[in-house]
Image (cartoon, rainbow, N blue to C red):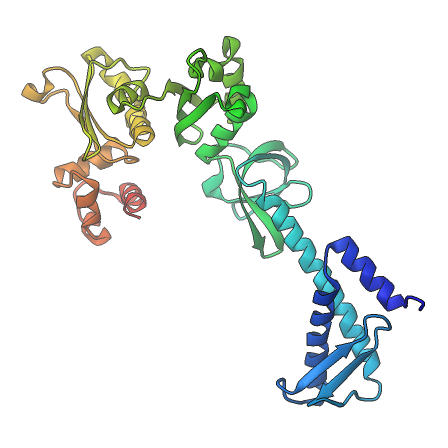
Length: 373
């Protein structure tokens, strides 16, 4: 039997697009029934359609009785064509989403294709990458046709088809960049244990080694700093501190506060709090500009960190308490002065109650909201 034009087209489309003939035929039947009801009425429960996969002939039945109207073949053929085209579009979308879903957590190169309402749209080849303001590095310029790397976060169906949510501000972007530059990470001998980042300003990254003869920090820095400098160049000269991870919390906290030197770390493991003593001449270094160094150390280690100098408990002059992971020094002190000294105590408050506290302005309130979520 000669293969009809319909059957040949059906087989070719199914082969090229990875579709099953049964799924295409079933979809055509549904569409034909919908077209029949629109033009001729009938009950959905009693209507069926038959599609001959060889000839392409389409018939409609109501309770088993052939009710195919005269001239309905043209309508049915047009419907079948539309269904197949729609099926192709859907399969292409599904294939594209599946392809990029497998790439989530990796880095891709693209160029800035469009800028609209704060969104940066990247051309990644087969698909567009969408970068909202929250995923952009503050102060970074995104000029049209600029080529740069982005971190793939989520493949999703957008308003104009499949798209990928991309980022340059995510801490995992820095982690992925190191994986590209440091062969030991891909080999599994060096592991990124933790990372904390304030995009465009500073990142702290803690690394460990599975082999005693491999220096994890040295591996990430590279000979004459070549590896870390390659990462820094990609993220706009953002400062990067690379420290050794340690399963002993006190040693890890001391390392996380680098470049400051630590005298002692007193832990309260159950409350995830640490009192850190530093020499007076190291106090400002330990705290960092606007509290950034200790704030990032708190994010990196997961501990609330109080920075003190020896003897400060008696005179209380040099004491600075940085409360809660992720809050600025000023906001943390305002909460502490209000008697809120733990995350649990904070979450027990309503946003309206926090808003009324002395020292909590709009910016501080946004910080607190983020922590309370």
